[in-house]
Length: 291
Ligand SMILES: NC(=O)c1ccc[n+]([C@@H]2O[C@H](COP(=O)([O-])OP(=O)(O)OC[C@H]3O[C@@H](n4cnc5c(N)ncnc54)[C@H](OP(=O)(O)O)[C@@H]3O)[C@@H](O)[C@H]2O)c1
Image (tube, rainbow, N blue to C red):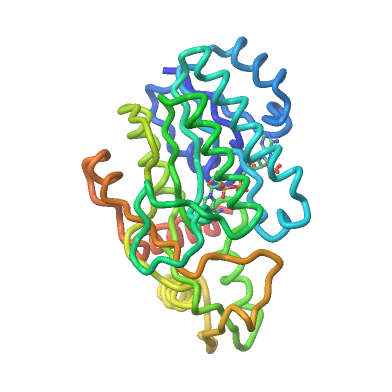
C-alpha cells in the first residue's frame, strides 16, 4: 500500500514517519515538496505517486495567529482540504483528514459526540470545520479524525514549553478553567495506522482517555519529568482563570470528546493521557541521552 503524507515534518507527520508499518510505502511530503494550497502541485504529486491513501497531517495550527491571518488559515485548513477531497474522490483514494476539538464551542459539560453540533469560537476552529465540511461533501468515503491538545517528542508543544519554563522560572501560572484531553501523537498515529487498514468512513474522535485542565496537565508534566530526571527541582504552579491569561483567540472551556465509537472501530481502549505523557517524556529523555 502506498500512502502520501502531507505535513510530514509537523508533530503528527513526524510521528507517522517514525512509526510507519514496514508493509507500507510512505511518501512523506511537506511545505517545500508539496504545498497543499497549490492545487496543481497536489494533482502532480498524485499523478506521480499514485497513492492508495492520503493522510492530511498538514495544517495551519497557530490558534492565536489565525485570528489575524484568516486568509492563510482558510487556504490551508479549508481550501487545501477541499482540493485533497476532490482529488481523492476522483482517483478512488482513501483520505484521512485530521481535525480538532476546537470545532466545538465548549458549552457542553459532557463529552462531545462526533455528530454533536460544531460551533467554533475562533478562526482556527472555523477553518478546520470548513475543511471537514468540504471533505464530507466531496469525498464521503473519507474519515475525519478529530483529536485534541496534541503533543509530541517532535516539534514544539505545551509539554516542551512547560519543561523549558519549569527549568527557567521560580513559579508558573497555568489556566485551570479550560478542560480537555491532552493527546500524544503516538496514540493518534497508532489509531491512524489502524484506520488505514480498516478504512472506515465518517467522523471519529481520537484522543487519549481521561480529562484535565491545562493546569492539571502542567502539574502532571512536572511530576513525571521530576520522576524521570528531566527536571531537577519542583516549582510552585498556580491555577489561573482564562481572563488572567488573555489570548487573541477564544478557546472552548470544555472540549472533551466522546471516543467510544472510535474505540469500537479500533477494537481497543485508548490509553489514559497520563500513561501517554509518561511514554512521551521517556522518549524525550532517550532523545536527550542519544543527542
Ligand atoms: N497541535 C494541536 O494541539 C492539535 C490539536 C487538535 C488537532 N490538531 C490537528 O492535528 C493535525 C496535526 O497537527 P500538528 O500538531 O502535527 O501540526 P504541526 O506540528 O503544526 O504540523 C503541521 C505541518 O503542516 C505543514 N504545513 C503548513 N502549511 C502547509 C502547506 N501549505 N503545505 C504543506 N504543509 C503545510 C507545517 O509546515 P510548516 O511548519 O513549515 O508551516 C507543519 O509541518 C492538524 O490537522 C491539526 O489541526 C492539532
